[in-house]
Length: 318
Image (cartoon, rainbow, N blue to C red; front, side, top):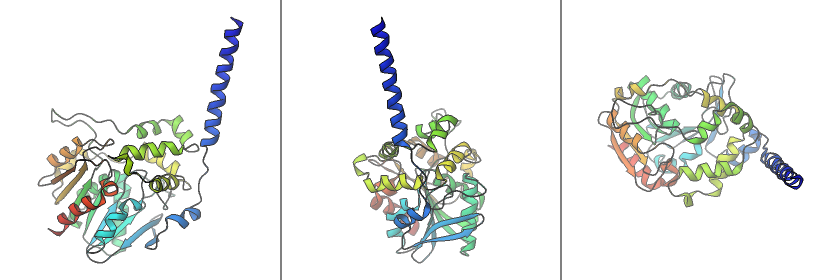
């Protein structure tokens, strides 16, 4: 019995040592924005002081304006390949939303989709752009369709790429409420959230990025590094936790009131927002067009940029 107790004590000690070492090696300090600018501030990048935000944005090309809105945990870099093509005929405007990328946190600490929508309208006003196109992915898609509801006279066409916002059960008997991605659920826990703000394992981001691609072999190491390092930008982790606790007004029931020409693009292998949501948007928005990419996941503009931007260009030019 004494030997059993002794070995049990050793086992518990080893487990605690293992946990301590894991936490010690997983601790990550914030990265100063100046250090990140050296790597992620591109030749087309600029900062614009708007409202209480020092907004990192990228404006490229000439022609009608199209705003490109990224999703959760992402940055304006997610649209790089789309910008390369769209900027040949359009003025592309992408930005790091507050709490993301080089923009980072704000004094107001408002990271809701409602605030993001207002910010982009204010940005359009700053550039003296009356009407424009909008494309958004995931959370950015939620922002995009909210903009279409708030000021429909300013939005020429709407592109939703694996858009968020259709979570709760509908009156349609075939529709079911959908759980949010696991990472959103765990980070909404207060205790886990506090740990995340200081301890952010690289493998967690690698695993999540592989999950959002339909073909995880397409995930490049530099893409994982970018997502990870920009999350470690000073203040972004704390801003992320605040955003997940208050994402904004639920306007799902208003989606059928969208009358703007809409293109819905979706990856059939989306593990974060199932393709069923694409059909919900398609059914809810009158005269919307739906294209589903068989092998793609949650971020078609990154995973299959050529095919997805070709669909977007065809729609915009009609």
